[in-house]
Image 1 (cartoon, rainbow, N blue to C red):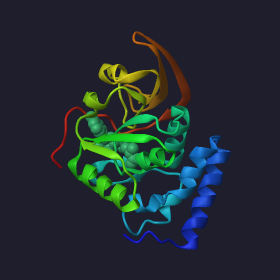
Image 2: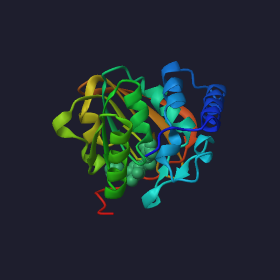
Image 3: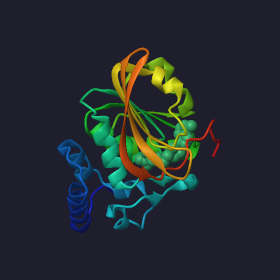
Image 4: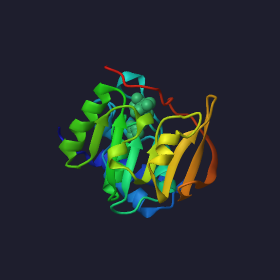
Length: 218
Ligand code: SAH
């Protein structure tokens, strides 16, 4: 993979970061990560410029790479710190996982489509990130590596899966788009102790692909 890029793409990425600031993203560490990572490497060749528009984009298996603003706000709300053991559900293109890794998180990520899992693994290796990635069902989490300080769900859930709340560390935070219909509300859950949670909402509707049960051989 050619990871050298043109000044044009660098310029477009700098403009994207400015747009995200205008839209309210404040965490400099999030902005720096987005300013550094070559998002065009996570989508099909030939669409390099579109990679720096603030829009979602189709990837394989009928899935999407989230819009940069969505990645930015989810990451900001997660308040990820260096070395936080962080579980992402829905690897997709791998872009969000790389943003978390770039911020110093110790990332575990799960994807139900085999093809997406394989291509994300390849790009993590090519870009030199050591991210623990798995082909599996996110509803099961990753029991053997729990508890996680942070959990990020990047697919729409009707409610937050209990298994994932169980695998969240006390003092940890989970962020997920929750909703039954076509849009979701970003939901932030802090685990106070084994049985007590604080829930808050970010009041903007989002539109995610659904979190589905089971794995896919594709
Ligand atoms: N975070 C991704 C975007 C994710 S789109 C990125 O940065 O590109 C949501 C992803 O969640 C899709 O790839 C979808 O296949 C995956 N997904 C849906 N249900 C899942 C499940 N039960 N377990 C794991 N992944 C799931």
